[in-house]
Length: 260
Image (cartoon, rainbow, N blue to C red; front, top):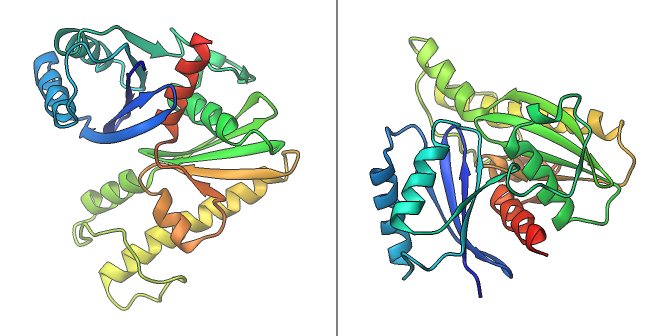
């Protein structure tokens, strides 16, 4: 059975996954903003994969979705040197089976298009889908039938939190975990910030999904992904499903489709 290495290069993290034609296996995450070289990244890959008993010659291909152009050739060199397998980039080397209705199709981020494709392949029954990715930005992407329609780009949770903490002298950096199903009236700065962020982004997600649903033929499912999706799902019913590795799933499915 052919093994595939999947790589989702985002602005904050490089998510890596093991897969074969039957499904997605173990996943890892590396920071994007380290000053990577082909050797440093290759050694990190070799260490992670070595822990799974895998290494050079064990992969048929490395499938990549990247929104960080400067890091893409670094990963290609690292994979070639340390794993000796070809690297295929989405969507240049293998395209999704979705009609792209963006005004300028080439302007759609590869991660947005891949999340929408993955949502449709994993949930083929509903007339419409909204994939919500809580990444560096929060993106809402809409699919009707097998057509990608476009969506919305909003501030991201962690980037907003970082901007607030660094741009104000007295506000601390805090955990964004809450143990409540409704926002508390914060009586201290930490509670005020945590509940403001978590329930504020939940309210944004609920409101925007409700307004987008009104423009889409139903039934419509909302699929959440990204590091903050679980936190939103814990306090809101607006996400019908949470798939933390939606983009890696999309890479696997798109590559598999290209081989059939």
